[in-house]
Amino acid sequence: MQKVIVITGVSRGLGQGMTAEFIDRGHAVIGCARSQAAVNQLNQTYGQPHQFSVVDVADETQVKAWAGSFLSRNFVPDLLINNAALVNDLAPLWEVPSDEFSQLIDVNIKGVTHVIRHVIPAMLARRQGIIVNLSSGWGRSTSPMVAPYCASKWAIEGLTRALAQELPPGMAAIPLSPGIIHTDMLETCYGEQAANYTSIQTWVKTAVPFILQLSARDNGVPLSVPA
Image (cartoon, rainbow, N blue to C red; front, top):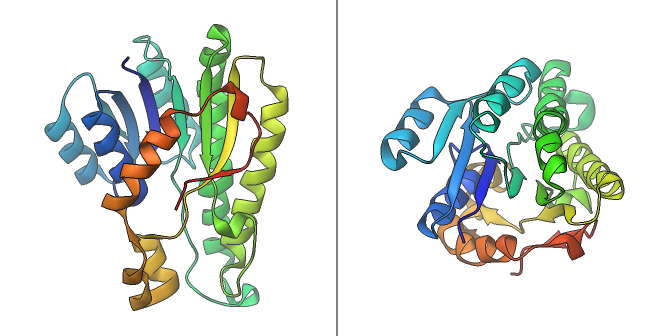
């Protein structure tokens, strides 16, 4: 049965990989990213019923307009995946510039909240749907030089588990750690060592079916994609 899946941050990394895999499995994907070129390419590659838009999730006005564009066409998500995120350039916390810290918080925390605020009401009206907020191993542990990123993902863990307590029966909010995957973000953190970890292409073959089987019984449970 075809699901409507809404994903943020689809221009690269896990978002791009999940988009391709969900579509290959016959689902309709509504996605957003900040890159106009990437969005154009996705729309050219996939076409209808899929829809990709240029949106900065840190800008609530843009998020509201984007949500309205697909909800007005009755594309209410069965699955909402908040994936868009930034990582800080490696540095001790006191050396991270204020504007860099603020941008990370605006995307990684406020961006998730903006999407939830403008999409969940339509899901609540049907009393069904799964919200997956991408967390991280650094949302459950810490490392030096990535304190802003850790802070944001710890926040996502708490935010999601509190949200889960607010949802009606039949729905779920789940903080999901993807594991350690070879992405551009991992290269920022691990340098050349990032290539030693699981590729996106391999990861999606496990992650996408795992996400598709999530249900209301998983509400509020911190989960991880199986290694």
